[in-house]
Length: 340
Image (tube, rainbow, N blue to C red):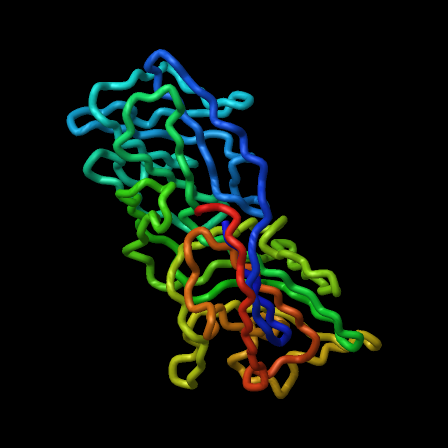
C-alpha cells in the first residue's frame, strides 16, 4: 500500500512511500491439483494486510461452462497454502477470483457477476485478486492481491509551551461511508488492473475517536494515532474529496475532519477556548468543546485512492479561528516498492 502523509500545523501537507516486507517463495505442486501462491501489497503500518500477514482467502473459479471452485477457503500452512477437498484442473482455462476476507454474501460472485454490494468503512482491510485464463501448470496459481480501500490515519500532537489541548471527539465529515465494488476483468498482477467503486452512499460522518467514559486526550509533542486503540476505524471508501467551505445559510460543506477540543492555559489551567467570542458555528452543543475543522482535500490531494495510505498529521499549538488557518501543500515523490 502506497503511503501519503499530510501534515497540518494549524496547517501543512506532504507525501511519502512504504517500506518492504519479506515474501515467501512460491512452491510447485504436481499431479494436476490446483494450488495457490498469494502476494499482498506491501505496507509499513498495521493493521494493513501484507503477504507476510495474510492468513487466508476465499476462491471462486469458473470455466466458460462450469463452476470449478465456489467459495473455497484457502489458508496458510507454514510456507504453503492449503484447502480441502482438493480440486483438479479441468480441460478448459479457468478464471480465478479471490477475496480476503470473504464478503461474497454482499454480492454474488459468478462467472457473469462480480459486484460486491454495500461494502462499508471500518476496521477491515478488504483485499481482492483476479487471475484469468489459467491452465494446468506444475506451478501454483499466482494471486496478486490489491487493497480495495483507502487507509486513513490521523496523528494529533501539540508542541505548545503555552497551551494544553484536550481532545474529546474526532470525526471525518461529508465522506462516503459505503459503496459497491466491482472486481476487474484483468489480472491484478497487471499495472492499472484495479476494481471500480460505484453507488457511493450519501456523504456522512465517521467517528474516529470517542471516549465512552467522557475522558479526553491530552496532546503531547509526540504524535498519537487516534485511529488506533479506540474505535479502530482505519479503512475508508476511495472517492473524490470536496473543498471545505462555510456559509451562514447552509453551514459547513465539503470533506473535512472535525476535532472537538478545549484549549487551556498551561500555567493557570484556565479554559481560554472556546470562549464568549467563539461563534456559534464553532461550538459543540451541550459540551464545553469547540470545533476545529481541517479540510481532507487540498490542491494536490483531491481524492482517496484505493491502495493508498493517507496519514494526516495535525499539530495544534494555538487557539482556533477558522479564517486564519492557511494550508501550504507540498508533495514529495513516493517510491513504489511493489507493482501494485
